[in-house]
Image: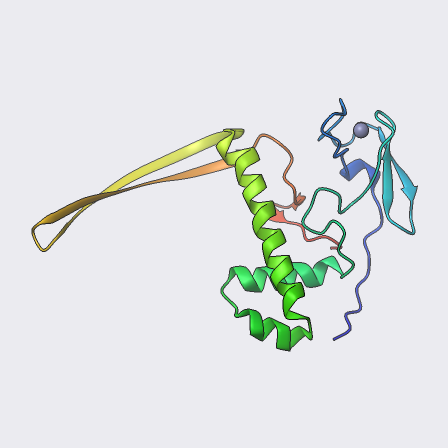
Length: 170
Ligand SMILES: [Zn+2]
């Protein structure tokens, strides 16, 4: 399956330096990011002098396939689509799909650790609920849940557009 995919023009204002040791790390539209190479889609941070691609720090780093295909595959996996079905539908190697699944899982775990566990959230509303369940009049259990509406205090790994995740290349 050959996808005809248009690539998005490079926009240095929407990109931030991924170097955690850089004083401009994580900040967009500061004027410190310049386009370094259009062919290889590389940027350069004038603050720290490091070069990086738009895939640096994402699960796409080092992968050659089009990001749209990878996003589709990972989305299908997340919704329970069998790996073998994806292998057959897209003509991909099973190890490739498995690798992408592992990369996505590791990236999600890192985001969870960095944003959720570190408490770098700006909670707007939290709704707590508790259910008391009695089973066979012997076992009692309480199930507690909390639903939080939040917005991250740090820029998301995936850029957002109109409140929806913006897929790379869109
Ligand atoms: Zn930098």
